[in-house]
Structure formats: structure tokens, C-alpha cells
Image (cartoon, rainbow, N blue to C red; front, side):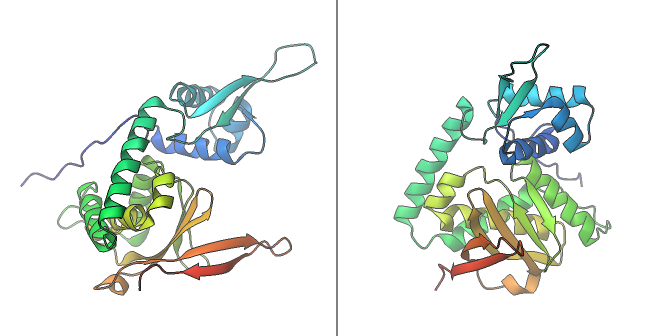
Length: 263
């Protein structure tokens, strides 16, 4: 029986190209930087040749995901070209169309089906499984290899993921491609995304699942806690909304409030 192929989904706004993961990283760096960055800055931070960095930066500018400007300088000589990041879905014309469609569909589903969370999670599971390359019948993947496959998939979809092991295993998602829709209807968008991740983990025969999601820790940051797969059997994944305040002295985060929307 032929192996099932993973469908190629590329709408011009995701990292669905051979360079998607690296460009996600560069976008994250540009967005988080307090000042515009040069080609040399990016090449040193990412660990790539300056010509490669310039190629990625110019491609991001062409896609509407970065802005280019010439450094204002009163000094003689050639002025540097500097780059500033924009978010996917903000400037690219095609992305604007997809964002509008997402908002319309999300708002309609949320208003007409207020208890749709579990259904969205199941839909997400099905798509997560569908988008994941299934291991061969006798292929064994350890959890580290599984985690890397899932992280690569999330990276290609512009979630800019980061794996963290302390205080317990979790993922940080530094970008949500549908942040505005997610804020308006987390029971639709967030549960769909959690279902996709868990569907992918299940397809790869992982013993782990996302057991709790903390959306909107910061303006573009969500945290997904990993736990044993048995923890989500027969019960919904928790959505716990937390407001985190960074302690100036310790650098630790403190949950100011928590709310689980599920009864």
C-alpha cells in the first residue's frame, strides 16, 4: 500500500517553502528587536552568511513581512540598509483576504454555535493527523524526534514555536497567524489549533499531548503545556487565560489571574 503523502498547503502567507522555518526565525527576531536591524546583524544572530541573510530579508520585504529603510546618518560614506519586521496577516494583500475570511467564519461559528469548542478540537485533530507524515509501519520515533517533527510543522505554519523543558515540558508559540480571530473567539480558533497539534502527536505515536493552553500571555505569545496522552482522554484540553507580569528582580513570571472558560 503506498505511503500517504502530506498535502502541500501554501497560501503565500505561511512558511510553506523550503526556507519557511529560517524566515520565521528572522521575522521573530525583527519583530522583537527594539531597533531596525542590518544584514550583518541578522547574519550574526541567525548564524548564516550575510548574502544568505540579505536574500531572506529581501524575500520577506517582497512578501510584505518586513520593511526596508536606509539608515539616517550624518556621516560620510555608504549608509546601511535596515529592516523592521511586520506580522504575517498585517500587510500582505493576500494575507489580508485570508484574515478577513477567517474573521467572518470564526465570528459566525462562535455566534451561532457557542458550545462548539469540542467540535473544533476534533476537527483540529483530524487536520493535524492529515497534515502529518505518518511513520512507516515498523518505524519507531523517540519523543525527541517526534517533538522536532511537530515543531518543524508549526514553524512552517508561522507559529514560531520554541520547545522549553523547565519547569515542565511545554511549547511557546511566539506568533499566531490568526491572532485577531483567536482573541475574538478562542473556543473556536485556539481549540482548533490545540486539536491540530494533538492530532499530529497522535499520528506520530507520541505518548504526549497538549493538556493545557495559555493563550495571549503577551500580545503574540501563547504557551502549550505537554502531559501524558491519557490526561486528555474523554475530557477537553484546558484553556487557561493568564496575565503574566515580569518581576523586575527575579525575571520570573507570575500569574495574576486564571480563568478556565470550560465549566
